[in-house]
Image (cartoon, rainbow over all chains, first blue to last red):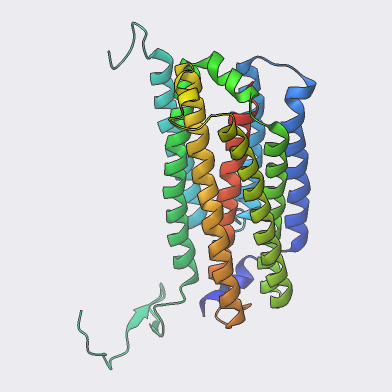
Amino acid sequence: MNTNSNQELHPVKSSVYINVFYLLIGLTILTLAQPMVIDLDLGSTLIVQLGIAFTKAILIVAYYMHIKSSSSLFKKLIYTTVVLWIVLYTLMAIDTYYRYTPNDLFR
Amino acid sequence: MSNTVSTEPEIIYDKQGNPHEVVDFNNDYEGAKLGFWLFLFTEIMIFGAMFLVFGFYLFQNTPEFMQSSGELNRVLGGTNTFILLLSALCMGLSLVKLRNGQPNTSKKFIWATIVLATIFLVIKYIEWSHEIHLGIYPGSPTLNEMENGTKLFFGLYFTMTGLHGLHIIIGIGVMFWVLALINSGKITSTDFVVLENTALYWDLVHLVWVFVFPIFYLIY
């Protein structure tokens, strides 16, 4: 009763996997090419590299992990996790930035 | 809860108030996936905490981290990135084939994933062997004489790629189990949640590497 109804809910096709695979290959080539093509400082390198990594992550979660075609329960679960993740990482980033300075929260 | 089997059927009601007899508490597709996603979130917490530690020490020891990153083998690391990407595709296709009623093709794709995962581990072994040969491993006399930032970088490198490698090994084990379940008819084209959750796990392993690779290999 369960799996049959869900199979109708989100049919998956090989073509979706293969198209996303080509996109991911392209992004991986960009990842490897960036240090060889343009020599950036650390800050810019991190922005470019993490930008590519997050784009890949969104593609993987949306298509390979089927969140795009999942029920709203799973979508909300992912959104909530992402918000929580941003809050925790922002707090940590603020602490990292001010640690061992006169504004150190833990001094 | 009583141990005796109740003869009364359990009834649930839908929004319109129509009664339905509960026939099976198992085989709950959404429940199985939800439970597995909760497990994946705990995995994200494990790796997420390590990424935070990495970010903190990168900020504190920027020159040493950049220098150490330059010493890693980008060709081997990059090759592993492509291998893992290809293995994630194979795992996804195995699920598609199973659902389309082609269990034999599905099994071939799982075997391909196992082979790719093994190649990943062999490359990782070559990388680690090279570093250990140079005397760089956590607690080694050579590493202990280096700067604090270098010690932290290689400590995190071995911890994070090691934990990731452990997940690959566990993944290979789970895939053999899935193959056995397909062979014994316990995973079928209509009851495939175990394979789907295994694919989710493998995608998470791939996802972690998507972030591990640039932060360790490409910040030089």
